[in-house]
Image (cartoon, rainbow, N blue to C red; front, top):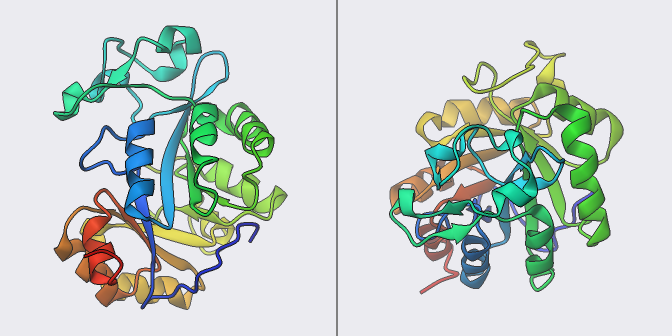
Length: 256
């Protein structure tokens, strides 16, 4: 495990993360959302990386631009960084528009918040070579290597990270609908994962206990209200990815 976390954490004292930043109130994966998450006092933020046509890591979750942004349509991998400068995220989410940011711009911003861990979610689409190398180069350039870990739905990416790095690796549960290149069975993709992220809608004591039996860290997302935060505490989630971190921060006595 290459990342460092000075505070003790456990099922009783989970890591509280801003899922795509403070995404309940600000456009997800934008610099504004990440800055507002930092102001809340989160332990960690989770961000999504998709690659542009010219190999620039961009902060965007969905496969198609028109789902949450404007004015471009189609896959983000079909546009260069220069073309993506016109993209705005917000209006389609009922929020004020914000520009589509790069990983490098995020790293520059979060140099102001050196104690916040960064969970980098590498989206499928550009493969291992097209994604991992350019992302690593930027993270190394800005000195992030002791404050990151990785997450991916792509079994090829998690296997590469497991086999070639010391970073903590998070992946989806077996049979997750949006997983790709997933090899079933205990010696398959699961063997490459240090932690598993259970969707909040599927979170249960039984699922969490099974992960603990397998020696996996229990992660869950997304959490947007007090009921979800309370359930996570009852089940013993160790890393809570929150669209709205405030309910969990309040339950843990870290916010009035």
